[in-house]
Image (tube, rainbow, N blue to C red; front, side, top):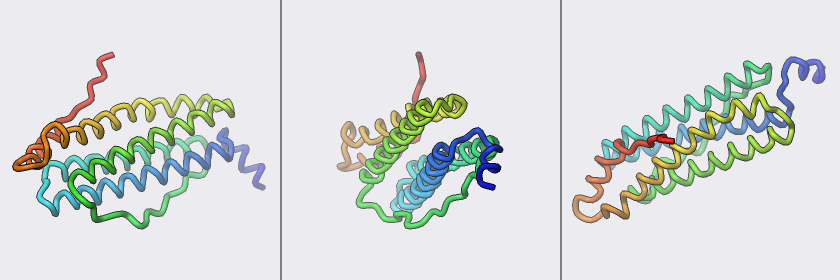
Amino acid sequence: MKDLLRLRTSLTEEIERVLNEQIKMEADASAMYLAMSAWCDRNGFDCSAGYFKEQSDEEREHMLRLFKYVSDMGGRAVSPDVTNVQVEFESFRSVFEQALQQEIAVTQSFNRIADRCQKSKDYVTFTFLQWFLKEQIEEEYVARRALELFDVIGEEGTGQYEIDKRVPKIKYEDTY
């Protein structure tokens, strides 16, 4: 029966598994960003709270895009459990450090999936992943620039207030 079910999809078991792992990673990222939004809101960083809420929504959209792809290809998409979401953070800066670490981890994960797709000659999924790989350029850029504000502006005096105001204005321009 298992072999018969495999005929319904062009996804190999390995590719289906890693895509479901990425679905989980995106769900976890969405929950983490929502927790960061709540933390920022509780600590008076309204602009950053809005920024992280938008990031949470984007990660959920990424999760759903992957979920739909697996389903559309005849695979079994798995709705992930999200548990143990961190809700407290050491500092305003640490929130942004963790956000950048998260985005780098997501980029590395998509690179590993793309590599597996090439090795298994799954060029359909490899092509599908190109949107995510391009998206990660923007995600890392914005996270990096937000963190750099702490060094450029500094946190003393009204520094954190200025950082909070500037975070949502950071945009990536793909000029090439």
